[in-house]
Image (cartoon, helix red, strand yellow):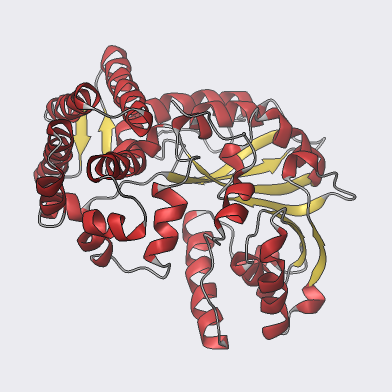
Length: 407
């Protein structure tokens, strides 16, 4: 088994691999307009942070990579300070700000990783997207952002959630097993397995970038994720309250008098219960809410954890026994989802669709277990449930730093 990569050094992998995972090659004002519109929909409709909240705000962003998101914040009127330890992307980042006439909005550029950065002044909004889950222990970055966000200000996190990693990790593990079986690896090999799947979706990033960012990335592992309930609890203990999230962490169906005070601790407790019942939804990227009793919730959680652990093991060792266990694990989930008195789905068709996907995933795992690389690649490129299913590994969490007058 290979040694795990160092925590909090994802930028080193990107630097050494020569990839920029978020690079979108924005060339014209129209390109930037389209990207701004996309981000505005996300922030307005899902995170309840419309562009107006960024106007005249002092914003600190950690890990901006080539700076596409930073350009949007600048367009919305924010004054920006960037912390990017991978200095290889600095020329592209700076060229972006020059190209779009936003140099005056860029207040500073620093080369420290987040755990080594000391903010000079607190910001109105702090952003850390796409890497924060790899920084361990979490206290390292929490201590930094607690100092970096002013009271009443906001922290925006985009991270890989532990159970939500399941399908992303499965894709990575299946690719690595396929590479072991044929004795080759790399983007050309990945295309043999996932070419049809990739071409079936609308995307702006290059296939090779996805291969390096997900399939080859040593940080696509459960140890480099964050557990959503634990995250909310840690933030509650560190002066932050949950403001919004995507997927939703709070139960929007709960009934509560609008004047009832809610402490960060009570919110964290409510969120924990809701997230435990949402575990299947997060793992499979479909609405599959557990309406059963607490024992049913716990049993499904154990199923998911065992399967994720086995998929994680397949990243390193693979082989017949591991992949047979994965195949059985997907079929076990299929049985659980079929219990309509335990799992709520949007419709009978939606339930059948997820079960078909799980059956396809199990079939892929079985082919990996038997070592049939040819049949595995053929199946992956023609089976529609497998082609159309991706999961939803990444979550947004927005937190507001409490003020002295907050309850």
